[in-house]
Picture 1 (cartoon, rainbow, N blue to C red):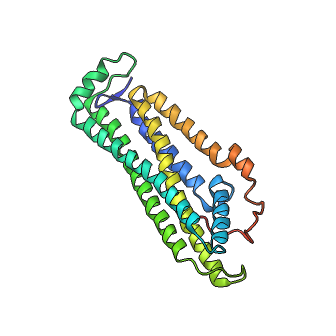
Picture 2 (cartoon, helix red, strand yellow):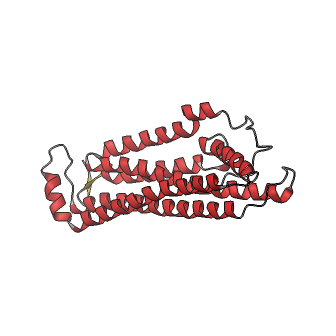
Length: 245
């Protein structure tokens, strides 16, 4: 098999396939035109219902608790991501010892020092990306909590100021959820990248499998079928909001 600096061509191709499939899926799934048929957009419509009903309540303790719970759930993932990043940095620091352990495992492909570092760095970049997305999502859910506290007094649905507030708050909440979704997507691809230590071919196959899984969950999941099509009206939403991000 042709080699370049001791690296086989499947190992050279695998990270390119990984990045191309991830970026390609993101470009399609995150396109606003296509996004209106996704589970994320349907949940955006439900967030609009939540905020619209929130402003009609005098007591908003439940609403602040919801925002706090959402923020806490994402903070949990952000904390775990820091541990993963620290572990990967430690693996790079103990490169020789880890390589010695890997060479003793018969079903793992042989790897050079350069290739091993490339595999770990790919995982490191993936989870650093996830960490930034999670932390930004946490901050935005904190902003949602502040906006709930600043919500105007109950008023009629025909109040234009109230309608603008509902739209802005729902969009900030949906942006937070969108960044959290992208971070979880990075986890899925990161788990596929782990298989590169086993085989470059397995790595590419699992990356394609991840794309199919996340696509199905966004466009063809049972949850989306239960919630209904994004074209179906939801009680409390007079019209769809202009954007989900």
